[in-house]
Image 1 (cartoon, rainbow, N blue to C red):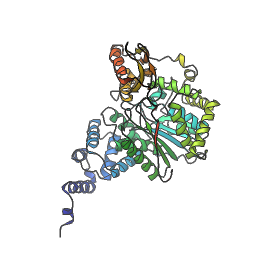
Image 2: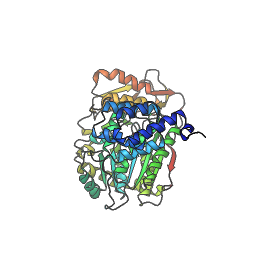
Image 3: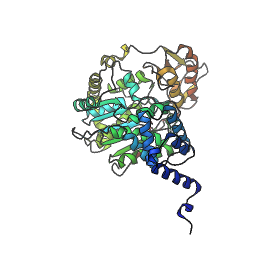
Image 4: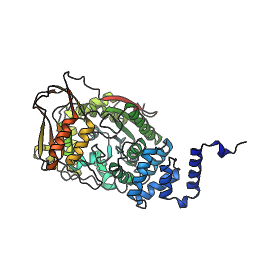
Length: 469
Ligand code: URA
């Protein structure tokens, strides 16, 4: 009879011995063995993953070693079990907040990242104005996609670095708090997120899922809504990939006992017209003041409906959607936003009169050629996202500062009629020498055609689990 180990394939035998070795000699866990294992395509034991996350968070594993791990895992893959363990290890790299002593069902929303994706800015105050507490821990720009924290910080004075006690107090007082990862909450994600951003290791389901869910589960929520972006400007470019990510996120949320709803949404074209930190705040303010910016408000209301239903104040997502529209129409949502901005040190005058914003970068208009005719068919979100980073709105290196007033404003979007010499977009940048290249890049994102294109659906699919279905 074959010995049990003979029944294993060479790869799984190797995996078996590695896992066994790492478990047996846990005192000897070290980064070189872990890198070797991942480089060779082996699965890591729970203990090895926990060790790696703890050692990187504490600084014992360096950025260059972790970069090697990120790339090896990206290329070789990680199993569902490894993803679950990674999420758990990142979640417990810091404190897991318990907000159960505060009234209400706390609900948050997170997006997997897109271009012009400012939805959190109108959404969070709308939901809080309807009476559902929103404790929101967001991220910075990642790759070509923008981040809520960078957007919030473009508001003069706005402080996203609150202590845990300030975070609780703010949520209790105002029903909404908007912060970034702290040294206490999901510190592993804080470090890994910044490293992935500059090592081309962002669009990988295990990393995206563990990053999002570790910080969301740590912030003390009772339920979660996810906006899983799909298309050219998303980290998941195809529907099957986006669906896999959505299911992974929903499964992790529900494994932790949090009802989780995901929406797969179209990200082939930037959301709204503004791409860049302050530009997106300004567009969001217009939305909160009642302007119906296409796509932005459609998506905001759908996600608000889901959050209000999970938060127990609406019977159905559709009823929640109507409540959300009411608080925009009666001004309560904008008032809530002003209150939060003020409570977190921001200058509300910047929002009351957005024309007086002091940090807007110099503007350069971009025009259609003398022969351009017909209609805009496409505005490629990936090209616009990458170009926005180059204007200064995003980072090329971890330590790069972002320019709050840089970005791109799209005057023409798919369906717009075009004439020769018409203004297509405006570029905002301090990088004067790069303007011709950036203008050229923006033009290359546009495709024109004779017929007006049919509007592409924004909402692709709703994904639920047992607790949220
Ligand atoms: N948002 C996150 O928080 N993490 C990711 O990896 C992608 C989007």
